[in-house]
Image 1 (tube, rainbow, N blue to C red):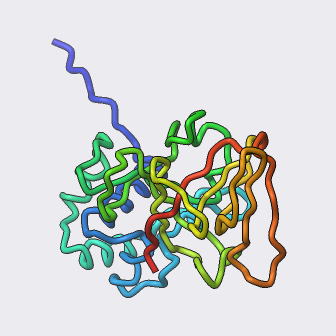
Image 2 (cartoon, helix red, strand yellow):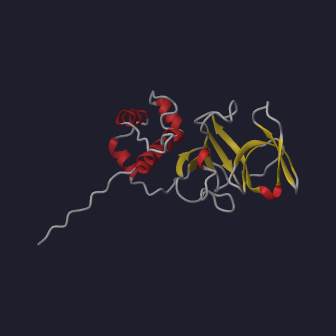
Image 3 (tube, helix red, strand yellow):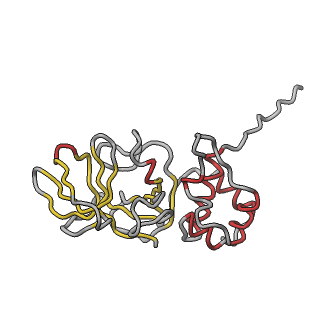
Length: 218
């Protein structure tokens, strides 16, 4: 009888980082929150640190994983299970994507709901909108309101009023975070989070979708 050797499966970059995201979610933390609790630089697990400027994959070190496990009171066996997680979310979790990746094609469907690959999960306050998702801010372009590593909870189904902070995606794929000043059938009038910048307007025909920001981890 010939014995058939099982094919060895190699771990991928995406699997390891997804497991760290799930580890943070199960601890009720954002990736940056887990890094802080582990005594690491807050940006250690941020999405902006997972790929180098020239496009090379950056892997977390064994030391950083060990510290994260200790901070989350988890074992290496439980981490291995997170790597094999089928992605089914529990009732406290929402889809998570880096803000920089949110403008890419395929990240959302025509209704502005999460779609395609790249989404992970994070535990955040529950909402009545089952389509709620989260975006992780990268860089300081939205400072001082939102900083690198902050998580914003976005609800496509929540009513939007004047003065609400919103995420707007244009049909060209550009993502904008601003305060809604006025909304008419013809245009959106937006006030930048940075008070030194001028207000802007976007034609209604150029808007793919707009969603309200419900909460931020700061």
